[in-house]
Amino acid sequence: MKHGRRYLALAAAGALAGAAVSGWLPAWLAAWYALASVVAFALYGHDKRAARLGRWRTPERTLQLLAFAGGWPGALLGQSVFAHKHRKTAFQWVFALCVVANIASLVVLLRA
Image (cartoon, rainbow, N blue to C red; front, side, top):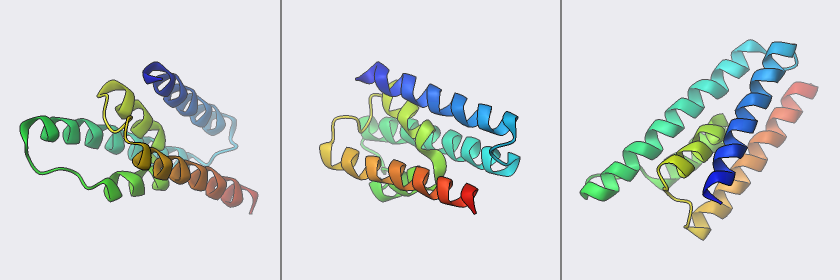
C-alpha cells in the first residue's frame, strides 16, 4: 500500500494540474492546492523526524485540517515517502473523511 499512496498522490496532483491547465480549476485554487500539499508534505517529514528524536510533534488535528483544506495530495505523498501515519487506523479513517469532504467541497464550489 506504500506505493499505492504515492501513485494516488501523483495522480491527484496530475489531475489537479490538468484541471488547472484546461481552465476547469481556477489558477488561484490550483496554487492553493499546490501550496497546501507542499506544506503538508513538509509537516509529515518534520513530524516523522520529531518522532524519531523524541521532540515536539505536529498535532494530528493539524495534519487532518491541512488535508481537509486541500493538502491531501501532499499528505498522501508524505505518508508514503516518510512511512508516517499510514498504519494508524483511526488516523486513516479521519484522513479519508477529510479527503472526501475536500473533494465534495471542491465539486460544490466549482458547480456554483
